Image 1: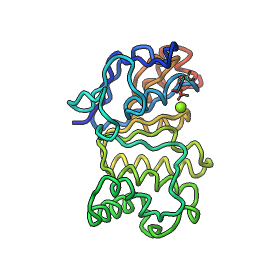
Image 2: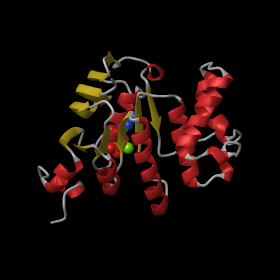
Image 3: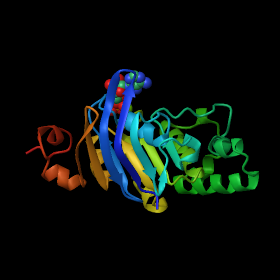
Image 4: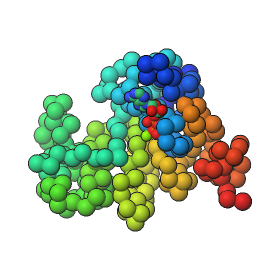
Length: 238
Ligand code: ADP
Ligand code: MG
């Protein structure tokens, strides 16, 4: 059981409060998408779940565990970023296995997990290539592969496709949906792309100025937005 529960989560940077007491429940295995304008706090919330930012007050649970003050590496989460800094001197396989190698996992186990991730992401033929010999979409697949090999309970994606061109974005969107079906892990996905939100989400969370504006299934928000703000992001054009 690895749902994510945020209770009265507040984030302050110095004097400035940017997240104002967010309550949110993401069910085990759910694909939850955060949308909202630039600066509304999507990345900050995601980074707090990851443990990359501390929580000023409130609590974060993953499954039954209170992880609010737990080290990122102990939380059972893996994050995929918009910029997928791969190590240029390492092969695809080495890039994917590097985290496990650093934490002392045996080579045999690393190879098995890398092979499994490569199968899921259709990277099998590219394992011995260096990043410079990959397309943008293939590089982003390797970045996702790095997350998969760690076997996280929760995947966190921060606008992972926004650096890709339109055609690749569609292709990768399909891949990510397939990944979710196949792995079934809880996923939290930040995007400003309405189509990504509508097609990937089980649940959409609309954020505005550090608060949750509305939560619902894509079609609920589309047909029945609470207000113009939500309609502007998700709502039907009518
Ligand atoms: P989004 O991802 O929705 O664009 P962010 O979570 O990056 O928004 O930012 C939310 C707010 O927090 C913004 O006002 C931003 O300027 C502020 N912020 C984010 N990170 C920091 C930081 N390290 N120090 C100070 N302010 C920050
Ligand atoms: Mg952001």
